[in-house]
Picture 1 (cartoon, rainbow, N blue to C red):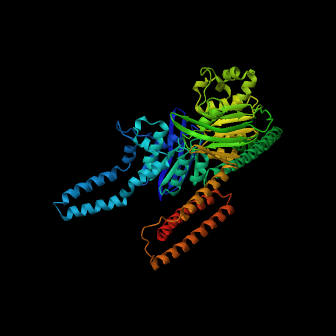
Picture 2 (picture 1 turned 45 degrees about the vertical axis):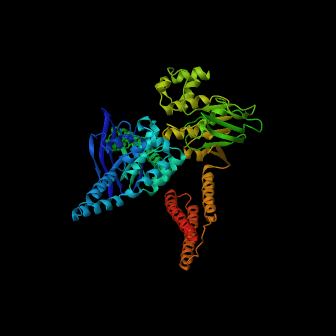
Picture 3 (picture 1 turned 45 degrees about the horizontal axis):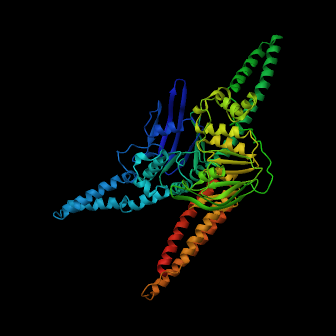
Length: 623
């Protein structure tokens, strides 16, 4: 069944340029689709048209009857004084109305037992149960906890929240409303890793339809089943997740390039032949003119094909200072806090040359503070940090600023980097600043452009310890790939704070997880860290299952039928564990098949939940 149909949508904001130019696609019920394309291609415009915020110039949108659509990036205005908890409760307003009506009927039925009242009450009670009325408090707590909405935030006025916090609350509200078609516009932008993983798990089990715009490639890989790229206002279709899209797009580019080169060779051949035909025709054979004209028409048709364009990659390299010594960074018993709250304490670590360390953790755990301590921008409350004598650091902060925001990008390079004009232009061009772009005041640049300019400036110095704080924030996918190209040949020590798991997975050789005021130091890549963390969680759960039950005052003899139930449960647990082991084996077999891996993971997640329930029942029976 089709949930959404988009037919020949045309939309322009300026004369002669259509942002969407005949865009058409359909989405079936339950599909999870990634909407891709460069910044400005019309992705957000499409979402605004789907929700009715904008009207298309031409074309039609059809939504399946009875289906409700919700857009995450839209933040409604709520009445003055509403708290975050009131906003979340508003998602269950229909259930509260049913509950109020049931209370009214209960009072009336004390004096009136008419069949009509009883029938209405029974129907309302069934609707309340079917719509989840008895679980709505639990659901709110579950969603709030998953999206890191704390009790303090629940009590806070919604209007006083930051933009990112409002987005999180709005996402929670739409999830609680059980919207049929979710439109997600950069849903992970204001989420930390834990909340992002929770959202991914929710979407994998969501029965409705999802359309997602995202620069989070790991999120797209895990969640979406197919991709639609908006290219020159039209839709191009890819029947897989983001990684499939990247490979297929490159394959299509190569095929188009081969065809273009073949056409160019044919044009050259036909041009020579037509010229020869005209020459021979002047020598007395007029019929050859017609053949030459026919060839020229073919040349004209072939000439209409344009050379396919490949995204320009950076051709840049850091100037590196060779590291000499054994220690890049030493931390000994570091402690730091603010306003009586300790962010972290007793941090100890040793960093040696060439390591690539990802510093991860929930928002507010102190990751950026730790980076500032390393950069000597702040002082620890206790302990000490030491940088090796030959260490030369460079730092890309989360919010990039410049000494003079009115200077152009070119003048900023000349002033701060003390380089020659041609060298400055060459370096800026390598980072995508060309032509008139270099004359733009730095204060007018976007957040992503500022990060790109700062990185361009850093690459001119001799460094051997590069520190990045959320380097891919505010960057689209193309800019993230540019940054990765720039870092790919950097061989010295790298420490970076990031929520971009694709970036972490690509660069990290060591992971620091800052949690509960302490660092978990894992030597290995991000995928290995996640597997190790999952094993630790499972071990903890098993240890809890093994804990002896609390002794009761009077221990009744266990009935025989209880023993049979336990035996049945143990057989079922064994079967579930065998299935999980089989799925692990399948995952290794299909290691390169992303679609199959997602299916296997979804099935494994369901089995894990079922297994935990079996363990709980086993524990209850044994108690």
